Image 1 (tube, rainbow, N blue to C red):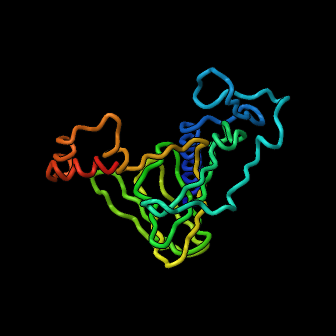
Image 2: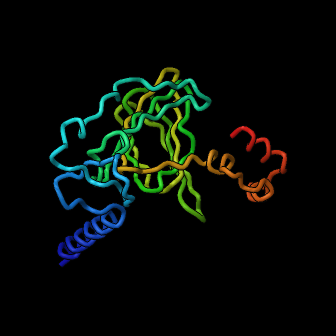
Image 3: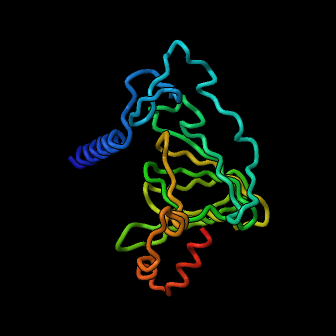
Length: 218
């Protein structure tokens, strides 16, 4: 009896995960639907290119072997492979990125509104973490070494930092063809038009001048 209960629980869990995945991005109804970026129709995704004009180039991308330029204030660079770079990803619900980090460089706190992220360290050591939702806002963090894997659940604020003295590299897979990214500081202090500075001063419980200084930076 106990074994039957466990088996039923596992089956129900698998079904729930399947329903959740289907709710996020629909399953394809054909072998592929290569994105046609010349189409004028607006749909939730991309219009399919005529299968007769599809070729191997629609399913391949070159460049992830090239280091990203990390000479910026964050000391990191993200090279994306989403449907915008690889049209064959359309309707398949996956994408990936390469992230390069200078020594002590960061991928600043951000979220992916449409994807869970699975990150693998290729070179170096990374401090990574995410924050759970309100009201707990618990920080889940760990230092990863080469070959280690970490999961950032969909929608949660997360970050990475190179804690080594040499460059670091990570590859991440995401559960959406177009996961989106919201960098917290840019969104809050660099929106166009700006969020009213007195609203932000009250929200962050700081002086108005502090908010205005931050807004000037973004």
